[in-house]
Length: 231
Image (cartoon, rainbow, N blue to C red):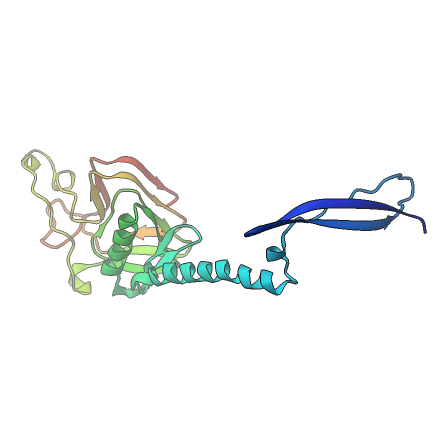
């Protein structure tokens, strides 16, 4: 079989030196064509998988990446989406353990990093007052639920209702906001999204709730750029 030959030259770079590699290659003629084009992978010896030198130099970046991923997981951060998994902060999601403190720890960690997504994997997260902060997204996975705890049976309380000098002119629920399952005041860029559920199971529905009770699932006051979707 007749063949055609071609010659390629390309540079290969190493620290302190430079050199040129030359490759002479022959290819069989293709029927009906007078030339053959070849795509060549360009790399220097440091990137050559067959080179011991290349393997040793490639290993360091991978080791550093692995170390970074370990640090992120240890801190509860999901490196895939800049998310903070509440289970990594101690949440059980079993429907009986109070997960209030773990959820708020995850929010605090995300806020300290400048913002992020606090993720709730499938499970039932029993909780009293959750303190939402700016630049935070609460994402509820399919099969997840944030369940409002009941002070009578779950041995805890919601945050106390804040003072309001105007509450004598309107009902209690429109005058006080902190005694809620999820609340925030003066926030910006917050979202509550995902296919999960928020269940106000332990909330009361009276105009004058008893001390320690909660009467709203979500309460955001003086906040902007708020998104609540799919819940």
